[in-house]
Image 1 (cartoon, rainbow, N blue to C red):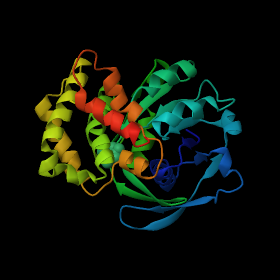
Image 2: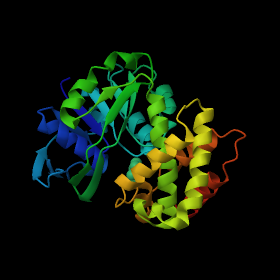
Image 3: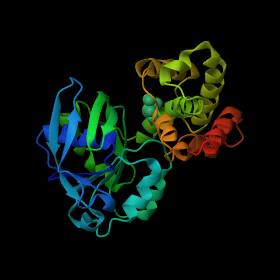
Image 4: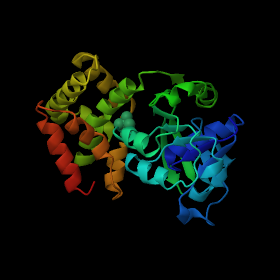
Amino acid sequence: MREWTILGAGALGCTFAALLREKGNAVSLLLNERHRGHFHPALEFIALNERRRLVETHTRFADQAAGIDCLLVLTKAYQVLPALTSLRGLSANTPVILLHNGMGVAEQVASALPHNPLLAGVTSHGALKEGPWQVRHTGKGETWLGPVNDKGKAFAHLTKALAGALGHAEWNEDIVSLQHRKLAINAVINPLTACHHIHNGQLHEPRFADVLDQLSEEVHSVLAQLGETETLTQFRRRLHSVIELTATNYSSMHQDLAHGRPTEIDYITGYVLRHAGRLPVPVCRQLYNEVKKQGG
Ligand code: PAF
């Protein structure tokens, strides 16, 4: 691997860039056209131990896609397809790794870029943008990658370089299952915290006990219908532990709604609704409508 190119210079994209640079990897940030001529060549990274440092990366724009060796996609779910289809000259040999939240995008990318090796992943690293080109790493997590198409299967070795920088990265052929597990957590925490304007830990207040029970059951039943084997009890245990571990965080959907940005609701709750079939999912539907009503 000569260079990692990161599409999505948000909190997580910049954190990945900083961690990869720290271990000596070449990294470029693929930036939106509006940053041409404006981007300061260094971003400020605040590590978990509070150490601040400037990280230097190369920059690229959509018209420089031809030289990309490996593309890590860390944009919002709804930005993935427009951003990828704007990359003129992206080689069909370039592996594309989708690390956004939510699901339903990989299928669209697979038909838009039918010849590229396509991988998807989930990560539980936490990061926060503190200012323009200033990011804070808020939590060390795990990162899993797996293939979306046959060509993607030849890129398991990428996890080794990522593990060196991120602390953990592993390969799993059944990446959809890990994506479902993450989506299930997001489908409960994100719309509830966004609609009620609360941080994650407030979901443990008694007033949310009933809605948490109902919503977790709805989400679990849809994923079980899709073949996932985690029991409802196991799912609820995992959910409560994520709520506890991220108690002081505002969820990404809460932050998006609070800042008037589009949310990823179509790729989180929307995914659950699209796969519900005949299963009743009234709470999911109500939260979906409420987030949309609030502008998300
Ligand atoms: O989307 C998010 O905010 C995070 O995935 C999670 C786990 C809900 C924590 O805030």
